[in-house]
Length: 222
Image 1 (cartoon, rainbow, N blue to C red):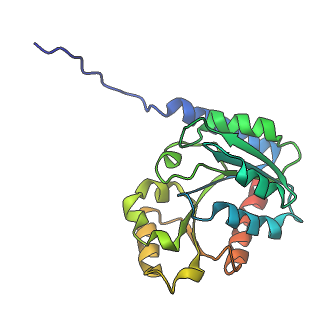
Image 2 (cartoon, rainbow, N blue to C red; image 1 turned 180 degrees about the vertical axis):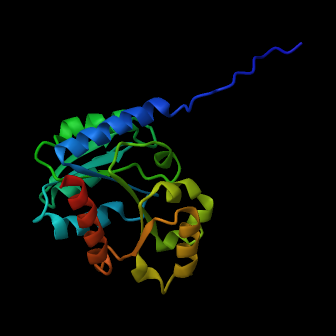
């Protein structure tokens, strides 16, 4: 005699989150505020890349940043030093943000006078890819030291992102990294993904990334 029940799940466990994310997106569109969800593994260079972007765009857009982390406020302080509005979100041990948590952050940040908001998600290539935050666009950073095989190991992350930013290209002389292999692997998962090769440290390629961000922001807020 079986001592358990088999329960068929007919609806996605993410259905409520997806519905809330759609509502957030609609509200942001009405408010003419562009929200970028920026993801990566720890140490890929999210904050450094963000600082490089801010330095180039802060005279054109009113920018706000939400820094998400399990603990600490190191990144929020670093972003605040650039002169833009910045808040720190502590997830209480959770390895991602969902739509509800993102909305709490947006309410605290205040988007009434902001054109361009960045959610720097928790450093993780798994959980953040599973939850729609309500962002206008998703982007992720893959750093050269991590290797060119990450699209094979974490396919969902590369599938949900509108832009893949390959950072730390100034370290290619040290690491075995194949640009063409990354492009091929990403495009196989997501043919519409834009791919940028940059060095947030030296500034190489950052202007091209900023042009893409400007285009996305302008189309969203027009």
